[in-house]
Structure formats: C-alpha cells, structure tokens
Length: 127
Image (cartoon, rainbow, N blue to C red; front, side, top):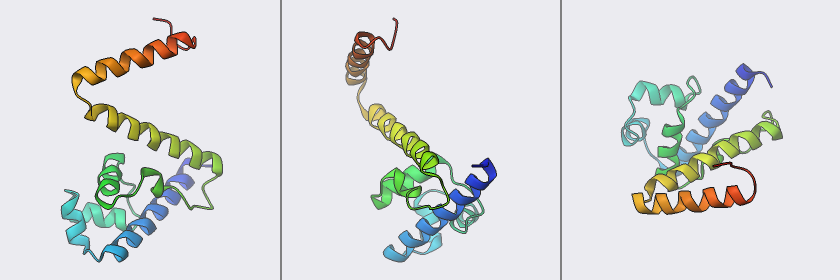
C-alpha cells in the first residue's frame, strides 16, 4: 500500500475512534485536549483527521480510556491484513518497552540477563 494512502487511512481511522471515545464518555474536545496535555488546535486536527498523532499521544489516550494500542488500527478494511499485522506488532513492542521501563533498575538488569541468555541458547545472539 502506498505510504500516503496508508497515512490517510490511519488518520481517518484514528479520527473515527476518537469520536467514538468522545461519544461514549461525553467529554468536550477542550477537556480531552487538556487531559492529554495537547494544544487544542493540535488535538482538533488529530480529532478531525488532519494530523496523524504521535505514538506517545496514542499511548496517553489509550491509557486514559483503557483501550489497547491496537484498538487504533483494528477495523479498517482498507489497511491490508499485512499492514495491520505490522502496526499491531509495533504497538505490542511499544507496550512491552513501556512495561520494561516501569521496572526498577535491578529488575531491568535481571530481565535483560534472562533474555540475553535465552537468545544466546537459541542461537539468536552472539555475545
């Protein structure tokens, strides 16, 4: 799929999902923009499908409304299954990184060692 077509489709899809969330929660655009620490005009342009939001913005919205990150890309007939799979993998990777960064330093070190050992045994990493 052409990159510009994909971008337009994502803008439209995210806009529809934001409208759905707003309808379900009854929030004003101003309140939503403020709660995500976004300038109203930036949020409005995302809401209307003119801007594609940053991933960090989608994370904040997802966290606030309790929706998984892949919520934003599910349900599009125009985005191929392959493209949806790629986007969902990116979101899953991002979710995993968020969890990792919430760990304290000691837990990160232990988890890193476990993962490196696992990959080494599987022949995926040469250390």
